[in-house]
View 1 (cartoon, rainbow, N blue to C red):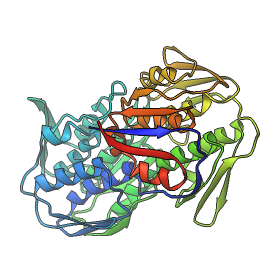
View 2: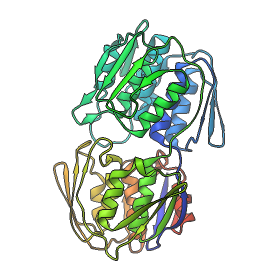
View 3: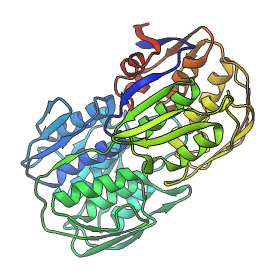
View 4: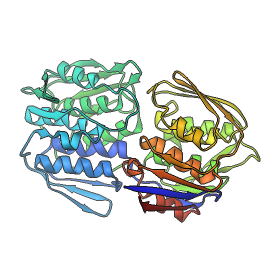
Amino acid sequence: MDKLVIEGGEPLSGAVRISGAKNACLPILAASLLTDKRCMISNVPDLKDVSTMVDILTSLGRDVARDGDTLEISGGSVKSVTASYELVSTMRASIAVLGPLVARYGEARVSFPGGCVIGPRPIDLHLKGLRALGAEIRIEEGYIIAAAGRLKGSRIYLGGHFGSSVLATANILMAAVLAEGETIIEDAACEPEIADLADFLRAMGADIEGRGTPTIRVRGVRELKGASHAVVPDRIEAGTYMIGAVLTDGRLFLENARAEHNLALIDKLRECGGAVEERAGGLDVYRRADRIRATDITTLTYPGFPTDLQAQMMSLLTLCEGISVVTEKIYPERFIHVSELNRMGSDIILEGSTAIIKGGGRLSGAPVMASDLRASAALVLAGLVADGRTEISRVYHLDRGYEHIEDKLSAVGAKVCRVRE
């Protein structure tokens, strides 16, 4: 098992190329199951989760070839409609194959998904939407088994207890494109990753209106063709490096980053004393104030502050002068990183779904353990400014969502290396 070793105190300076978005790429790869024609997907990040999705497609009978950042996915019918526990249990986004399989082949057998331990993430909205489209669903031996003739269009409300669901919206959208008649998805997720999926589906011949809004209208078609598509840049990776530039009092140019995808983060960074400027081809990020200041954050569905940047932002707030309050509205239990940040010298108190941060102190290097993908990134950021040496164990979480993070950080001045434990 690998760990990262970081010697803190070096500002990040230079350019970082932002990779394709993991959370857009995974459902797009699943959507290739909707056609028997070849698909070409470019700007694909080199991530463990992408490899897992490729393994799932291969297990279903697709041939997938990689050339640089481009995946070529073969056409033809699948050989199996079963996504096994061994693969699906490692990644929550694996559930995205459920909608395409039942829509294209009339049946699917998909294991319950796994992924990061960040609190309950039920799949009830996925099943509710598919049932509304006419699928019969039962649960047997840990598998979701869905069956249908041709799905029928329906009006579906996808609002959940903590707002709209990105993966459920993706699953129902993919199922609806081959359904008979019209489907209207209400309280659909508005994230850029959903808009990117819709753009790929439209390139395949789907009839979709309203992508990027709470109401998506889909008119089903009989079949889809193959298509080529470039995955949108990863706003969470971009946001992580944006925080890193301000945190370390450095300056980064983030190639391919899009300001419109991270407006809530940019607003908060400016409140803290950071600067984010749009340039041709990306974003220029640095600290404009001598001292960074506290601010309050509430995570919300897009375009609100992303839950996937909450942990990383908390690393910054530990250094901001004053008291900051972080309220987690999406995954109220997503605070496993707090105990590790406190080991490094932060002063954070938890009260239910709220974290109270007394900032302005210094962090010191320590051995810490990553608990999930974004918590891992938070610990890396903390290590970059901590006094001394930080060793982060279980960094396989990072490999699920950050492409070659130690290489990218080393290239802009960080003292970081990966070693075998």
